[in-house]
Image 1: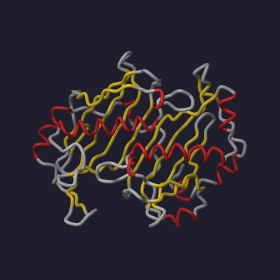
Image 2 (image 1 turned 30 degrees about the vertical axis):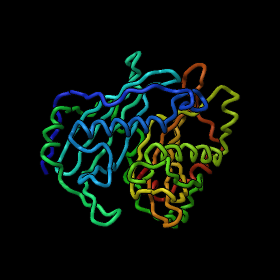
Image 3 (image 1 turned 45 degrees about the horizontal axis):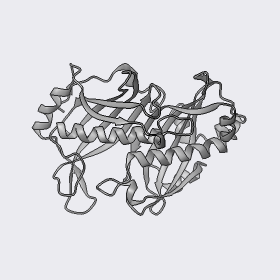
Length: 321
């Protein structure tokens, strides 16, 4: 394997945007689904800089498969904030590479989020949906050298993805684990990319809806938080992509608990194709409750610790969490 480790920190601007009111959540923060939408746009512009097509169009001879997105949230973005993204290549080998994106408030320069994304080079096969892993063209290796950027310490995994990979469960296996049903959805055309696959943005949207039901299952008064000037905030996410979901697919999301401290709650969502039972996406999340006036994290008040523990499946326990 011809793996290159980067040595300089030349980042390429790959995104510029504006936070609209309708993109903010119930506590006035830029909703996490739109962070993922901006990350996808940055991916496209970085692909162009590397001499690759910006998206996986049917006629293109090379595609990029995203295997994993790791996100850490560092600072708040609110309505009317402007933002930029800058990107680099942390490493590259024969068939895959690691991308780092930094999102900043363009007015203040403050870091808002970091994204570490793993790409694999694939070629579309002769049959619809068929692909194979192939080597990057030499031109991609050459271009990648221009944008070398090591993963900064504050972008490394801190509370997610530390306990091993979620196994490739099917829907029946996940149900037998006692995971709680938190979402039913349908993949509509506007939720998909040019390949007809569910986008990272809408997978994240489904995850957000699922989280509310999971907190409710834990008897956490979501609506009551608002009345007390509190809100839930995501600190870190890790999304692993298994099988694509396509336009017209019905989906089920099953959720589970992972770990609980005095101030942080870690949990996961498994998004399944409801028709085939195939696992499509795994999303692990660490969240806190924030005092919206004091801007401070407050202690969690999970009423039933036994219920929390009961929703931790065997693959979490075996991972040692």
